[in-house]
Image: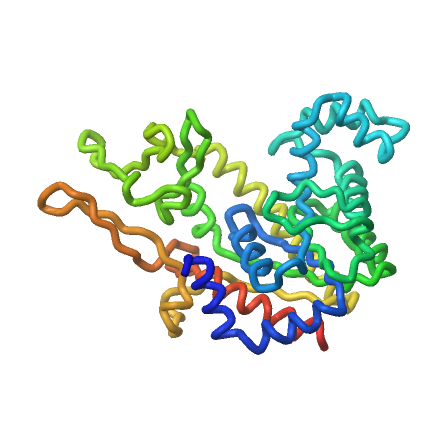
Length: 344
């Protein structure tokens, strides 16, 4: 069994009743899930497990992917795509999208109209791993929607509730999922990312993601371990700078306020919502170690060979040292919360 298959089997073994109940629910209902998660919060992994557990039931609409997809088109192709949406200002919107980056985001109004067009067309820009798209996507009984990267501002928050009302008419049941994790966990995940300057492959020292132990080396001059690219053997370099960490901290502050407000407003509006922590203070943890995420620890033996072992992932928060929960455990609890909040 692959690791993914083992993790899916673990979820079914420990949360099987919830999985079966949600599977039955999804046969006759469509969900609109606002997946509120900070960058490096594990969203892609969680969504991947949900799609493994419920094949062909979830379509992901990514705000960032929509923008990047248009940026990758030629001007003529992009204008053709944008013209039906922004009839009176197509060229202006195209320039705004082309110049957008992590510091200069697309305006709230433009992003919202792009999302609406994406949802209503079924012509999605999500990854190839997504299930096939069908015509008139919102009207299909087989697909629930997961919104990735929306809302991220207070203006988008108002637009999110406008979207809820629009899609309620089409039979979608809204659900607000707020994933909370300590900044220390997020920072550790970010600072352990590495990238190949030639191939753009991204690896991670903590998890050896996209690399293997064979690509781990030791620099005796710097007295540190490093990763090499499995394609070109070039040493991977640190991906996240101190400036990026500072900018990310500012972004988190804004997003935390937006997410907290969305949960509060959803609660007042009797819209199903839940907030899940994906880490736990070490001093308060008393569960099974299988609930926890692991990272890699490296040593040199007496012969100078690298050895590796898995250890519990730990990070620091203002309240003390924390463990991070394993994604499979988080997804199991997401399923339980969806059953509890949506079915009642």
